[in-house]
Image (cartoon, rainbow, N blue to C red; front, side):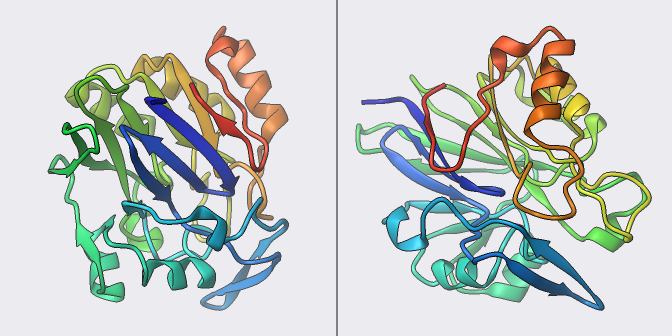
Amino acid sequence: MTRLAVRYVGGPTAVVEIGGLRLLTDPTFDPPGEHPVGARSLVKTAGPAFGAAEVGAVDAVLLSHDQHPDNLDDSGRALLADAPLVLSTASAHGRLGGTVRVLPNWETIELPRPDGGLLRITGVPAQHGPDGTEHLTGEVTGFVLAGDGLPSVYVSGDNASLGVVRTIAARVGPVDVALLFAGAARTPVADGPLTLTSAHAAEAARILGAAHVVPLHFEHWGHFTEGADSLVAAFASAGLADRLHLPKPGDRIEP
């Protein structure tokens, strides 16, 4: 059995297979188009590599946050109705209800694995923008996955802060694999990137001691300011090119 595989759908969305379980990150399956956010819109520039129906059954959805359509769109919301468990923030639970379960920072839920073991999922902090913008961008969370005989996996969610990454590294120690939401997203809501820049993604990999990095959320939306080329360049400049597994839509990566 493959211990870990990541199938990239597009944007922040990937199917993570670990320990015989199937997890889905931030579901976005809408076609390209405008998505209103208050008085402005976010523009999706490309559709997913495959539709929600092709994902099949999942054991849980890891939802970093629900308030932005580039992390949960209309098709993604429809998918949540069939998900047995959605792990997210208190704000998401209040707005979505259903099977959404709050996973506070540093608390852990254990899911039974087909092999008789357990997958531990721990909530970890995320800061969706520069210091002091939390009241504008809203509550966001990340996740760390671990279990006996499994690689440890950090799923960043929309985090822009290396300080947060250092806190996580200090609490959970080195991780084997980091799924880093990158793209240096920018909108008028904040004076600074809302997600990791490419250079900060490389530094996050170093801080975490991650042997493997699979970037997510670095393309397919108009408000991303850095993409695949800048990720490759940043990891090369940092001497970490061998750690980067840059996916194309539809790719299945076994880091």
